[in-house]
Image 1 (cartoon, one colour):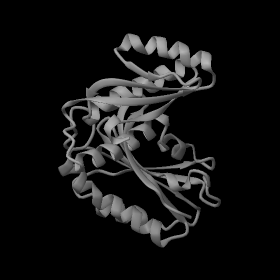
Image 2 (cartoon, one colour):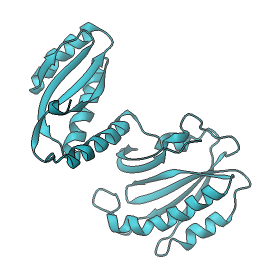
Image 3 (cartoon, one colour):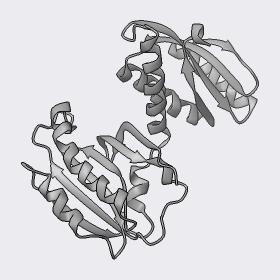
Length: 239
């Protein structure tokens, strides 16, 4: 089984959340023999205004995660699936069998230091808690955006400056594409072509993560209104 860990920022239950999750087990979940979801949670001592953890506190909390991950790597009765930080709280989740080693509880508590660890065991044979952490379409968009921005930054692109950014959308039929092309012009977008079922257009905006996430999320939802699928973006010169 191949692990594939992804970090992204999204929303869960209406709150901003940062999630680190193993997507490598998505197609195999639920894993046989691991019906219990173990959830370890702590209230943040230095929560940011948006309810997330700052870098300093994240470093302190890494000790708890390391303890849980170590047990997962050395026991066939445990599978660490990831963590979520939201609304001033961080939680780590594992799935376990009836024979899961109880030492994991003591080690997590021992590494908590100045935190009171709350523990919850939920019978979850369908792995619903894991599904709640798994990336949505907008979450995957965040992952891809971050990856491409790191590449552009290494190439010397000034992300805070405004750029002409090319976006791509596909549609189920030509009529939907034509309707979207007419609508997108109202958003000060320049349509580059009108392929029967695909559309390329340029919008001018900054490429910092906050600006880009807002634009691509809005375009994703807007495309869906026309039965379309947002495919991604790039700088025209980089194509």
